[in-house]
Length: 334
Ligand code: GLU
Image (cartoon, rainbow, N blue to C red; front, side, top):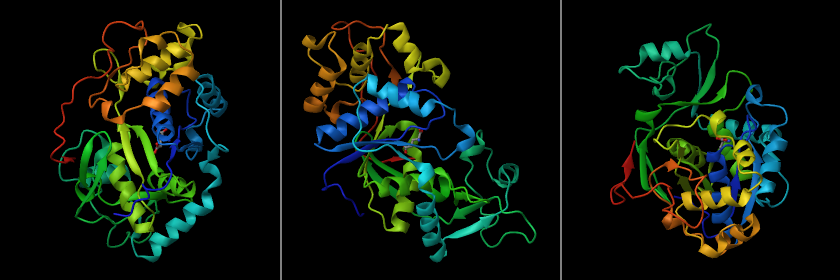
């Protein structure tokens, strides 16, 4: 597999300006920042503004301000997906020249009806290949799909270990563009990261299952595969999924009356790091400086958990996700 891991690290944080930062995105921001900086690298900020319909005015500024209030300063200019349209088109044409793409006229309903097994979530239905050998004459093109192989795509995640996925079983031929000129996340993210030379992707576990699709696209486009680290997800204390609304960093900061350092400390502990007691009450700059020197990716827990926001420091156990429960010797398959 082509990698560019021996180059100086270029990491990134790529929030979508569809809302304020939530705890999970703060974890991704801190984790990606420290892993890039710990390796002496650069940390970029990209605003994933591809989905214009879901964007909320003012959110891009809000995200920038929130990052700055934690001392998370990015290197260079902020980049935006909305300026990368030509590069998406070129990548699309490159895939098309290889005969990998085909137009698809299927609606979600048609796909669900044709799928062999019942699927609880429409997004998880592997595409049953209805248009693989040609779209019905007169049908409207709803998307462009890429043919996927029957073989497994495997990679080594820094936190999760070996991950293998058979794309044909999990998602089938997946969409890279809508029927119109709108490019979709899986293709866009691969092109965006390549344009900025990103060679380290640190982000939430919710994107783990997308990574094999992205690696497949990288291979088909001749793009080097970055190293990946998928971070634990922030849940409620009972393990429940948090809604973005309930979990806004700006509101937590409001409750903590400007104590960004306390929230940052919670994030470090959530990521399995153990800052020394002298850093109790420290400002963000000091905590990040400690993290740049001492962040240890091997301590990031495997399980998701609650962010111990309200706990004092020093004090009782971190409350972060604990215990390694996944067998690292055999690859995780899904
Ligand atoms: N923009 C995506 C999100 O906010 C993240 C993209 C990525 O990290 O690959 O969920």
